Length: 115
Image 1 (cartoon, rainbow, N blue to C red):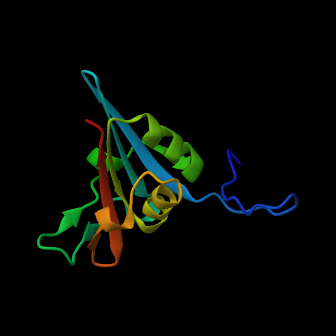
Image 2 (tube, rainbow, N blue to C red; image 1 turned 180 degrees about the vertical axis):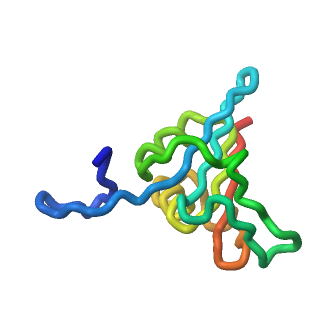
């Protein structure tokens, strides 16, 4: 296992990895980090004004656990995230607020831009 996640993790408790895809793209001084829950990669989400494609071209990078993803997001100037687990983790780590989340059907999506 690469990492374990959760503040309530006890000494003998082992949790399965909660994996997400993390893709980093550097453009000049900006670092874009795109993150999605692993199981929704390649899906088209409906429920918003237009269908939202969780495209492999944009989101598929390294398969990571949530703590690695949060660490990458903390270094980014722009973050694009989609998925229940990654958005929940971003809220718990105070990277986003619930008011800034939109829902594509039942799946949350959020963005962060540091100016």
